[in-house]
Image (cartoon, rainbow, N blue to C red; front, top):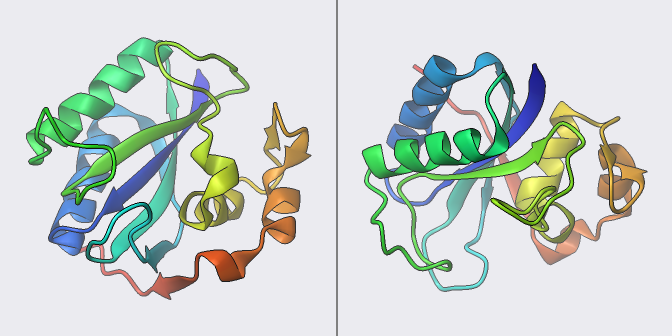
Length: 162
C-alpha cells in the first residue's frame, strides 16, 4: 500500500467540482483525508480565483495507473482533452507524491509545484508536516515555515462538503 497525495483545484463552479472530485477519489482510493480548502488567485494567467486542497489516500496500484485514474476523473468532470496548462479548470487533479518515489516519467514525482506554489505547499504541509521532500531534504513543515507566503496569499474557506 502506498500513501499518495493529490493536489485538487477548481475555478469553474468550484464548490460543485470539489465535491464531485472528493466523491470520485473516495470511490477509487482508500483512507482518503483532505486538508483545509484554500482560495487563491489564478497563477500564470488571468482567471477567476481557485479553490485548492490536498487529499491524502492509500493505493495498491502503480504510479501510471494512479495518473490514468486521475485523468479519467478530470475528463468525467468536464476537463477538455486539449486543456492548456495555464487556464481555468472545472477539476484539476495532480499527483504530488507517491510514497517517497522520485521520477520524471510517467509523471514528475515529487511534483515541482510543491516547492513553488503556496496553494500546494500549505495544504500538503497541513496534512503531512513530517513528510520529507526527497529532493529538498526538508519536511513539508520546514518548507512551509520558510516559504514567503506574501507572494501568493491564501484564504481558508469554510467549505461545506454536503
